[in-house]
Amino acid sequence: MNVLHSKINKILILVFSILGLGTLGYMWLSNYTFIDALYMTVITVTTVGFGELQPFNPEEKIFTIFLILTSITVFGYALSSFSEYLVSGKLFDHFKHKKVEKKINNLKGHTIVCGFGRNGKQAIAKLKNYQKEFVIIEQDKEIIEKLDLEGVLNIEGDSTTDEILLRAGIKKASNLITALPSDADNLFVVLSARQLNKDCKIISRASKESSYSKLKIAGADNVIMPDKLGGEHMASLVVTPDVIEFVDRLTIEGENTANLEEIAVDDLPKKYLNKTILDLDLRRKTGCTVIGYKNPNKDYLINPEADSILLEGTHLIVLGRPEQIKKLRELF
Image 1: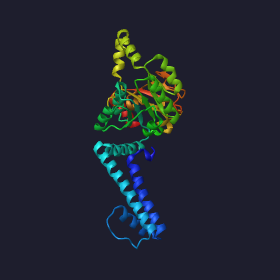
Image 2 (image 1 turned 90 degrees about the vertical axis):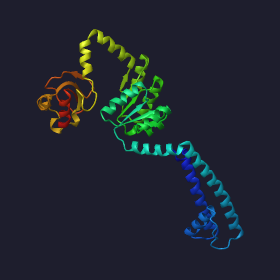
Image 3 (image 1 turned 135 degrees about the horizontal axis):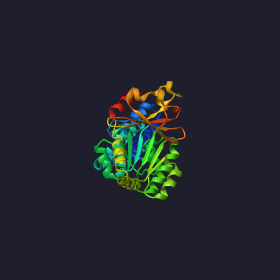
Image 4 (image 1 turned 180 degrees about the vertical axis):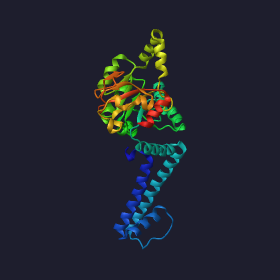
């Protein structure tokens, strides 16, 4: 962010400019040392009433008059601006933004969530359950105030702009979820985010069927249509109610209540690379069962064979009771 965008920074620049101008002026006109020139400048602009180090000639007197008048104007402006900051709460916002930016700069591999509407709230609830680090981008000031009270890391602004995405740490983020109500806005977010971070996984909300392909072309890894999913889910409860109820019970609710877990083969000990699922022996070690296999081409195999090879870049989907999943995490 440009330093001149902040009024506090402008005030500091003006004050130091006056001190620098006075110091250089006295060093040039009076042949003072740096310390003597700085001392003379400070007692002049603060009008403390001390005498000059040596009698002034006309040029030095004119410069001193100019310095006093200029410093009165600058310090008057500084005082009024600082008072405005205190009364309006902008000073608090300034330091809050600095604090937030410092926290975000320390994040790596976090998730950015654009929009804190119905879908954004659901996404945040899931991320919280899994204790994942995230940053929310939201424009609504009332929502921002609530998030501040809850201690949730957030950025106030338009997530379709590069500046706001950069402030949210897009370059170091692993995931981005854009859940804005407008498909056009989601498209802008996807385009900007993909340009700023080619490795970030981007998940976008869409309202219209026609937006699906556009978002995919723009760079979204996954496009979710909440209305379509809701309708399909309701119809499935009529056609296959027991299956849907069983699947609902497998919902990943949090760290201690999960029934499903994803394992990246790259994160396993090197001895398992190029071995088989059978060699992993998860059933005996943890009680969990491998129900899915994702190859490097991102193709999924349901209920893979025991002799499936654990290649670099592959992932396993594992099913188990919460205590079994916990044992799995402890083991790997």
